[in-house]
Image 1: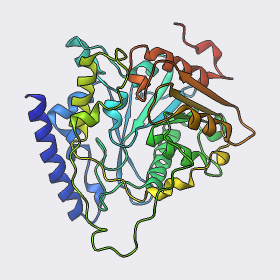
Image 2 (image 1 turned 30 degrees about the vertical axis):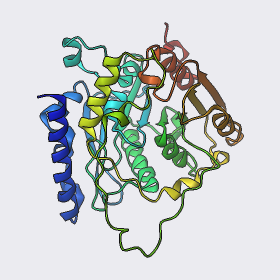
Image 3 (image 1 turned 90 degrees about the vertical axis):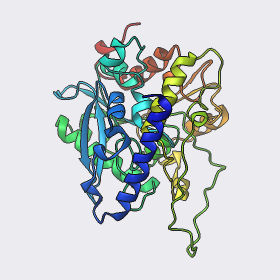
Length: 353
């Protein structure tokens, strides 16, 4: 099947599933099989991943979580949960061309999950509601505070799997782009269960204030169906020579297969609560020096205003844009993350490049 036909099939499935979700009074009846990643072509993108379904703590909505080599958790694991951004599932974002089948077909893995797993980090990623392998809920929208609550549900599930506690200090959280805002809101809670925070390519900007939606509107319950596009999938790659055209093309194919319909974010004014001064866990702020969505002055302001009393690190990578982890030379990015996570513990496990 051509990539265009795969996209068309995934779009039809996504539209049908959205109508199905609207008709359900309890959304937990749906699973990853009811999403584009549940199709034959979608499952090819999941090659090499362990797939879990975690029930949200309040409404039991199924949250799809991905892991690598995670079937046998150990007490001394260093654990990282990664959050995707505004538009695309964690699968193309963090597991691009990963798994043995892609390797057999001659593709070079760009899976950050594989890179971390090979180097002693027990890595998980999740999909927010309506992204990738997580079905939409009956409201059909994505809301920041709901995302934070779902992240907390997954963190609790990870802690139970690994029999760990906040005092152990072995669980960390990373958010990319808009996912970094979700991660920051989670860190601003009074007693976050994770010990370290990574704000990667954060789109935090104190000058932006998202408006509240009108209380009285005839169209407020309508959900606009907008298709994701090829151009939208490759817009983060802005520096010539930083990523091969074939790799960028594979990302676009995987992204459109995972999320043919644009997720409908709502209640964005909740991001107005992002306040770096309320973050009191060790934090790494990391971005590319040519990231158009995370300009350096704003990243420096974010770093400078983080809450006092905890270690913090600012790292800017040269010749890199928004998707540093997918570019050539992404090992620089991975090494910085690894060093930050291992700082102060298990130094014998640091990578050697």
